[in-house]
Length: 126
Image 1 (cartoon, rainbow, N blue to C red):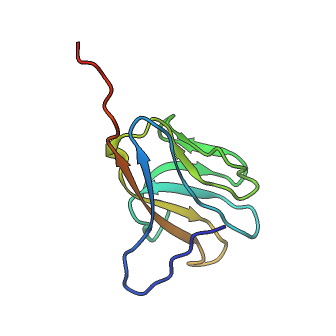
Image 2: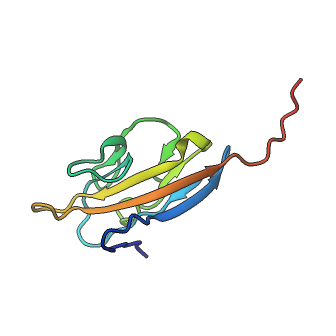
C-alpha cells in the first residue's frame, strides 16, 4: 500500500490527523531494492529531505534528530512509516518521505500533511 499523489498543480497531500500527547504514524512504503531514505519537515526539496528528522541506510536508523521520532515498521521490508511519539500541536505541517533511488531525479518523494489536534485537556490546574 503506497500513497502516490500525482496530480497537476494541486497541492493536496495525504493527510494524517492525530491528537496531542499521543503517538501518530505517517505512512510511507516503497518497492524495489532496499535503499536509504529520509524524513524531513516541509515539502520535499530537490535534494535530501530539507530539515532532516530521520535517516536510514535501508536497514537501520543512522540519524535521529529527536528521540520522539521512530521507525517502528520493518525497515528492510520497505516500511519506513514515521511514528511521532507524544505528538504536539507544533508537529503539525508538511512532512517529506524521500526514498533514494539510483540515477538522477529518480527519488520517490511523498509529501504528507500532519494535523495534530489539541485533544481533551484533562489536567487539573492546582
